[in-house]
Image (cartoon, rainbow, N blue to C red):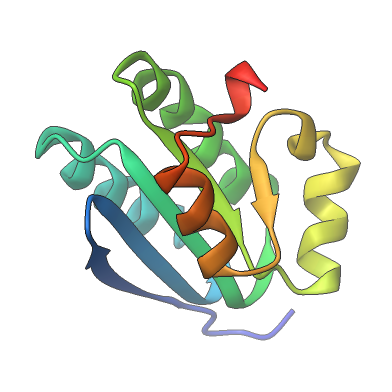
Length: 125
């Protein structure tokens, strides 16, 4: 792993879905940035969240923990967290830990947005 690893988070809104695009490394050092972004969305009443990991090069267990920390609250409020565009090495970490059973992991943002439009939430499929 390189030194000086950081993460950039770009937030966009598409209708009633908030999209966070992550770029860089998600580890114990950078996980608080994602936590803060998710807290802000939830506190503002945004419960339909799409997280695009297409530019994420690395994820650690601390990074994965951020997803787990918020999913219950989001779903209790009628929303979901969907994850899109994972690189193969990041996807393999998600698969190793069983995340596809807990989260919608989709190939594209459009596919995730379509699932939100159709009201498809992972917990009830």
